[in-house]
Image (cartoon, rainbow, N blue to C red; front, side):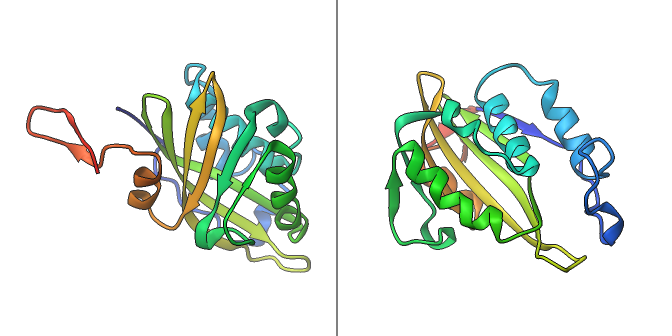
Length: 180
């Protein structure tokens, strides 16, 4: 299992950061710069997905998902149950993106094991006419097939996300992953 961490950075609390570029933002700039130096792979794909979300154009997701991708957000999804297929997943995201003047996903920690990855994310969104963002920490679980995302789920906590893709919870005394 590999764990990638970003150095802790205080989230901006003032309106000055609204509309700033990634490089200018004191939270996103260092975090995304850190991930841009990582090797290609699952972590890089999740980083690119976060950058696309933060940029407001998720059309690149069409290149990241398997044709039969399944997305399940549980209590964090606007609709009940899961959706299947690239266009259905993207259509589910669009109302959320459009509801905010700006929103962003910042990867804080990435936990990778085989073809699965769990991302601890900081989500922030600015509603129209507001200067203070709505913020939420979430965990997103991914399962990859052939280098593409075949499953994505959103959870309120890390353990639920890890369990969703069958990742180990912790290491035993010999350093081997323990299964949930």
